Length: 250
Image (cartoon, rainbow, N blue to C red; front, side, top):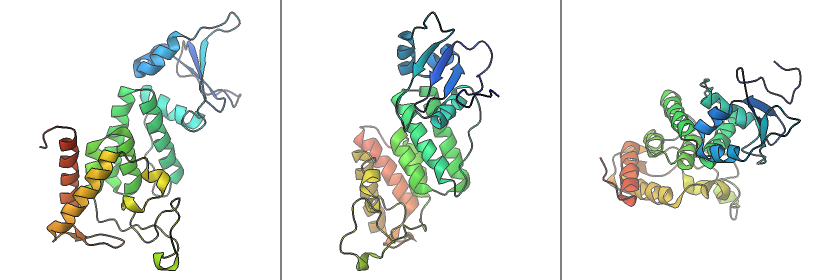
């Protein structure tokens, strides 16, 4: 490993390109790997020229949130075939990193990374079944209907938001989650998070929730609310999304 803390270990031999994260970390990589991974990066790399004083061309990234060194390292792990680490139960930092990675993948139209991370998320959630709210937001960002259906169908959700009880506050500020509501009550999410759920996902979620509640005989929802058959809700959500997109539900 390099003694320079701002230079990551090179990704193999004969690297010909330097990718510089928004926080100044230099990643020595192969240009053909970046071009194959992303149509956007392919076009950007075509404009990158090395100077006479430089051995390798370089690209400097600027987004402080999704193009930081920790996120770029995760992205490079995918395109270089390295394993990603499943978030542990209390590793909220890693959960946030994957949220930022998702946004990076979508920004750069990285099709292989997109399919890879979808597979990881489905497998991890199937194994653990925790952090449903995070995985649902991942599904929204990546437009992964199967993951969204899987998350919804996994209810009831017993984890709730903590805070001042609703009967003790006049109005909960929009920047806060509604206390004592389960984590998959998206209407109880804070406004910045709620706004990241696409309108068609919101419509299908609330429509499926009401239909599954009206059906009755389901499992009681954690954190309050009526009886909901969550497996039925997941199916209805998925079918509604397909209908909204003029596709035939299976």
